[in-house]
Every structure is written in C-alpha cells, then in structure tokens.
Length: 149
Ligand code: HEM
Image 1 (spheres, helix red, strand yellow):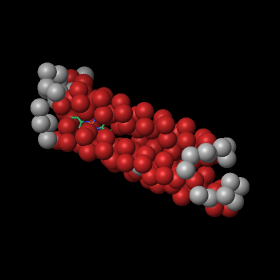
Image 2 (cartoon, rainbow, N blue to C red):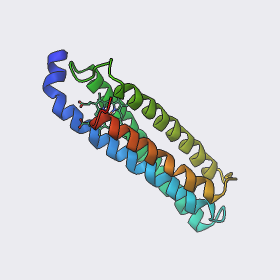
Image 3 (tube, rainbow, N blue to C red):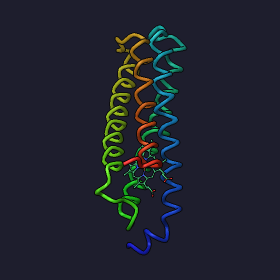
Image 4 (cartoon, protein in one colour):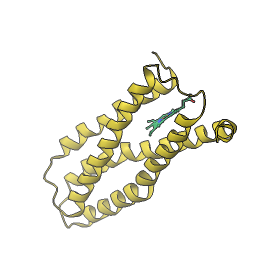
C-alpha cells in the first residue's frame, strides 16, 4: 500500500487540488445566490430559478467535490513522508478544514430553508457569510503551501 501511495502521489495530489477547486467554487458562489434569493418574492419565477440553481450547485458539484477532497486528502495523509505530525501547519490546516465542513453544513441548512420558502434572514446575513469560506480558504492554502511552522 505504501509503495502504491508513493507512486501515485503526484496524481493523488492533482486530484485533491481539482476537487478542492470544485468545492471552493461552490462554497464561494452558493452564499452569493442566497444574497439575491433573499430579496426575491417566495413563489415567484425568480425564486424558483434560484432554488433550481442552488439545488444543482449543492447536490451535483459541492457535495461530491467535498467527498472527493476528503478521500484524496486522506490518501495524502496516509502517504509516507508527506506529513510530519510534529509540525504545526497540519493541525491548523485540519482545524480550518473542520471549519469549512461546518460552514458547508450550515449552507446546506440554509438551502433547505429557501427550498421550503421558509427563509427569514436578510440578504446582509448571506453577504457576511460569504466571507467565511474566503478566510478559511486563505488559511488552508497558506498552511498547505507555505507551511510557516
Ligand atoms: C479532509 C480534508 C483535507 C485533507 C486531509 C488534506 C490533506 C492534504 C495533504 C496531506 C496534502 C499534501 C501536502 C504535500 O504533499 O505537500 C494536501 C495538499 C494540498 N491541500 Fe489539502 N487537505 C484537505 C482539504 C483541503 C482543502 C479544503 C483545501 C483548500 C481549501 C486544500 C488545499 C490543498 C492544497 C492547495 C494542497 C497542495 C499543496 C502543495 O502543492 O504542496 N486541502 N492536503
């Protein structure tokens, strides 16, 4: 298994980064859709179009991309010599990934509220929520690439 993981390392890392890009595209775009959706009249054509866009983004892109990120990231963790568990960066990266995963779950809950025409939050809430994945993304990439400690 170790020999396979070492040989496949560049490909697993490529697949990890591809999955991450797809997941992040959704994490940055979904709250933007919520911003506009919050101002649309429930039951209107506009609101129904947003529902469809949000469902496709979450179900077809974000959920599978998150799963793929975890699978390929997990394989990288298991590859010999990739992670020194005594270093600080991996723990900060894992904590920020936990934050990203919780944010994803919160967005999924908000998606359900819009789907059921039960949203009560103003557009401003989604505007602020939009910044959360951006900040976590900066921390995760800095830890994975610069590894400052
Ligand atoms: C369960 C989730 C994740 C795990 C277990 C994981 C783990 C890892 C590991 C072990 C590496 C290998 C580092 C190396 O070989 O140099 C890596 C690379 C990388 N990860 Fe993750 N990761 C996860 C999620 C994410 C997320 C959410 C992002 C971005 C938002 C991300 C961005 C990156 C990047 C950009 C690299 C490439 C670093 C380089 O080129 O050296 N990862 N990841």
